[in-house]
Length: 455
Image (cartoon, rainbow, N blue to C red; front, side):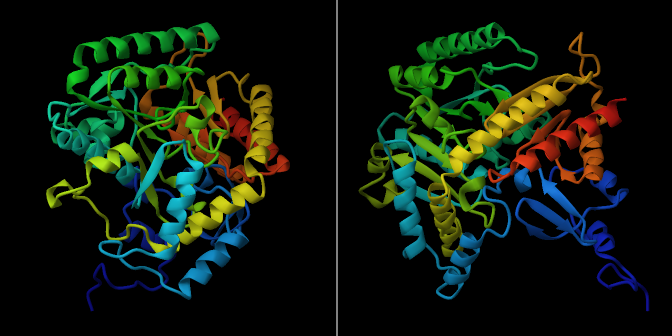
């Protein structure tokens, strides 16, 4: 019989099947097909375990989502208990117990004024929902001319079309430009190599000046400003100066423009406080959350809105919000999120994470920042970007084709750690439950891999 792609070949391994059938996200598949894939079979605590039983410290929290590590007892039990009740029921015309209870808790712990919760299933969709809400809000208020959005340069808000439209990273987004709506841009308030506080302040001042000028000239046509609060993650962990977010909020209030904060990456203790807005007392009109919401267990996202925005949609049928997802408010995911949030509060996890973040910062300063080909180490809480450069004195980047970040992340696996690059920025973003000893392992492995690859 002639072999076909659907037949299992004798002796075919999981790696063979992966290369034969899977298409991985943000991955050059030819490069993947020529490599030996690392296949994860299990996990325990802050470690991932491959099919050969080798253990790796999960240095990126399984793409920034694992809050408590893997196989957390309380979340396991909550999901099992919910399975005995109902795994899924639609929220179109119905509701469910975990979704209601989680909405109450989210309204309690998010910034004051965010009372309404609209569920979806990823960070991209949470942002997409916020954009559509902001747009329709002004239509319903009788101000249809307010239909444009402001976003920062180097922004990343997800991969659906609306989210890409307010994104600003050419590497990810330029191929899709003909599909997008045009967003208004202001400079990012943080730049690579702006080591000194004075350099950071200058970047923030330029950004705020540009934003103020844009709002003064065009506020009548601007629906909302969209921002990653205090850290631009996919841009390479660009850390905004303290006070910048608060100044942005004041400008939005002055010019009657909605403030949309994208807390997908920064939320649930990742950047220090439970939400990054909390650090500066900012109260947005709309907030997008995802990633850490379920502790890394199940896909779930939410867009929270103020009561004022919600009220504009009440009344006639044509005023409803025409948007939805099949798995909106999935009971299993909401049960996991409730258990995760309860564990954060019960264990005082934010205080523990703050201590580990301080330890991580000191270790990076001592053993990674001095390396010859490290241009800058950027950190906020347990969000870290280690920037690799060809020439530190001239601030010269590596040629993109060299894939230095990728090679470092491959090398660090030999030291028992999983990392993921953003170009030539190596990201460290461990679970909040990382131990003191694991912090030292993470930093030692990163330093060794960088030294090996850049030698």
